[in-house]
Length: 121
Figure 1 (cartoon, helix red, strand yellow):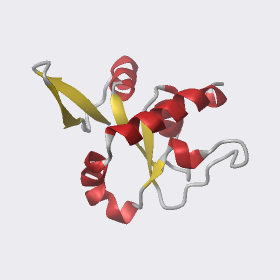
Figure 2 (tube, helix red, strand yellow):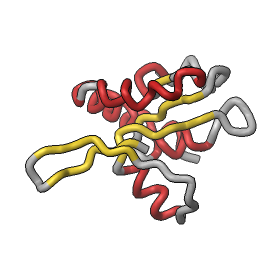
Figure 3 (spheres, rainbow, N blue to C red):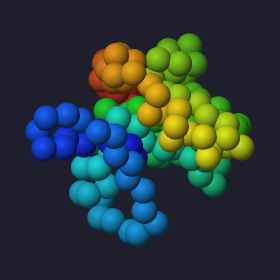
Figure 4 (cartoon, helix red, strand yellow):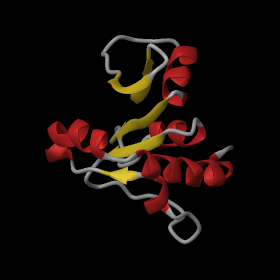
């Protein structure tokens, strides 16, 4: 997950959170909810539950899968909600995400908040 952390209350600096450690569901959800971007790599199939976790928590999902097939194409404007990134370019992803302006982040988060009811079940 990628969050924007406050530093001394004066300015905001980007922070990248990554770990291979296991965390409890409370910490997992808290970190995703506090993040601007959340990775949603391909799971054992071409889709992943991390996509829906991110959407429900208001985090912009980064689909790190070359062959993802998103459902409900006629009802959901996926291009406004998610960013797709090629697996072969994963090393360049942090630099790209840090280059995205806050106005785009806010617009995507507003779109997610307006649509996330579609993903609750």
